[in-house]
Length: 554
Image 1 (cartoon, helix red, strand yellow):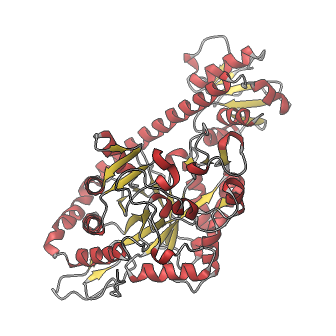
Image 2: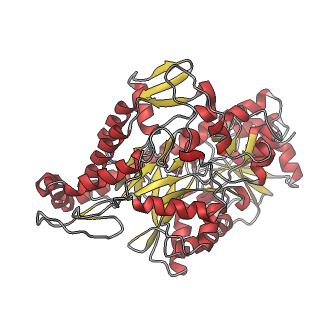
């Protein structure tokens, strides 16, 4: 299969997301074509942690090379063209990727960014090298995959790495490879300071001068509002015109972000699975590639909220998951080209600056644009062709775009009201999710006889304690303290009248007696802590963090 040298934008009358305009023979005005951003996995280089966890020299190539077919017609393993199992630590590798992407119309890479508790980083080498290698023309932005890294048998939710290899390497407590903890303002500042040199790089992707930054799982970040407010302040202090923050995999949008991304294929897999359109083949849950693209194209944006869309090159995670994995079947470059063309047209109608593709090089999950032995350069050529076809679309076909824009001003007020309502519903959803997760961890520890708040308090030299938040978690905490022979001095809650006389309860604005510590059971821990610090300088603990601490103890 040949590599076609025709470059994106040749005589097709389009303006790309990078601002490049080309002539249009029909005389129609140039259209703005979304910049295609391909998700980029920086896993293909040796790291000390991978060596410890999975064995010397492990990268995701190991999963790819050792993949086996799980059912009849299953095309595994996937092999890079000419067997090029590259090393992302080498400059020539990233230079080749940048040239290849540019040649076929990929506007930039969206690097997964792995930043964990206490500033620990994983797979950061390619991005840090790129920051040094200024001569590599590779536009890029970050997508913070902020989940904990876990082994498959861990009780903690998170990103499961290399399930097939879970017996290898060094054993880790509770199956947690790297723990995520979003911390407080000082941790947020350190994280921003790490990001700042990237944001200032000329190649970093920006919208109206604002660095584009994605949150892969914003629903999981409890202090998201406080963190993003802090980052926006820091951006202004450092001379940036702002930040453009996009949330992926959101249940509903959060008003502290600027836009949403409908992340695929998980969004459509959930829809197809719910509609009974999945077939299990020898343990592997399979979805038809055409059905997947139909779902992608039918997905509606969040009402009243800038929503970006995500195309899918393919999917097959059996190299990592084995027979417990999922896969797209009947995939082909032709289906991909037509699907991407439709998604480009849809993005144009909504006036979107970006269209995301999952992925450039996610070989261990069968999502990649890079050439392989099966299809050669066909998927890259499909990107080029879809861009050309979208740009050549007659102007009258874009009437829906003009209609949408003309009506925006008339419905702006209504949209803002809906956004506020959705944001409040989102807050309540996250609040109850936090409640469930805390109770779930607590119950597991209770079954193992490991719940003892008194031990934690004694270790901190705490004698008298108060409880902030007297609803469900607060009541359980009071009962547990009583069981351990402790009595809370008082409670703090805005709804004083709802509680009986067993424990004195103060409103947050009231003056209350001195205590050694206050335990916060409420969801919005950061906001409560900030409020309490205006009049209380003692120790403050978050209930969920105390439960986590008990889980870490042997």
